[in-house]
Image 1 (cartoon, rainbow, N blue to C red):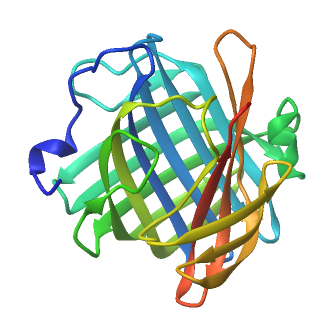
Image 2 (cartoon, rainbow, N blue to C red):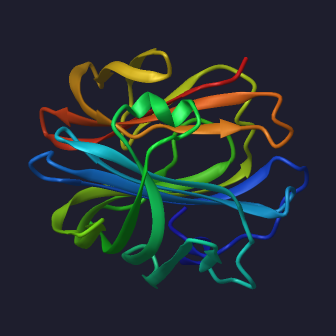
Length: 258
């Protein structure tokens, strides 16, 4: 997984559930704010999924979720649709990525509203952020398929409505490809670099997490609903901003529709 050629897009695999994803998360060192972006390419469905969120202990969740984004052309990772523009650029393979975002999201006072129609106030959301590798890439844990992840320093600007936030923190980025069925199978959880993870969820939200045997404190939640294209099922993914003894980062847990 240290082959620099893996940083680009991969040829489509067989099956409708094949997906390639590029995901980036970040957290301020004091835990006051965190967020993520995720681009999922699903050529079997002819669309891309785009998620972005910003949240903090004293701020509402601002969420962008669009499961009907046109697939980017060629080898590009730039996507554009009504109310959304985003680009994800590998500046130096295995070392440096930049992410730009201009979108309209929805502000949710209660994160559980993400699972109940996403009713909230429209809110502009923008990012101009850089992820610089602070460690070697490691194989991505669990969930099937191939991929890798990397701990990074993260810096740049985040725009929420009229608010401009300067960010100097850390975060993980991951790149995965392979079959991804979000609606069946067992629940799973993830935390970057964790060898042993124990997560408890209630209503789809993480209420307790222990990473490598050490308790983590959930600070804020940035969940996303994952409805099946035919509307017959919906899974719940929570991404929880957590405080660890060593700093602040993210835990995620999927509750499949079954």
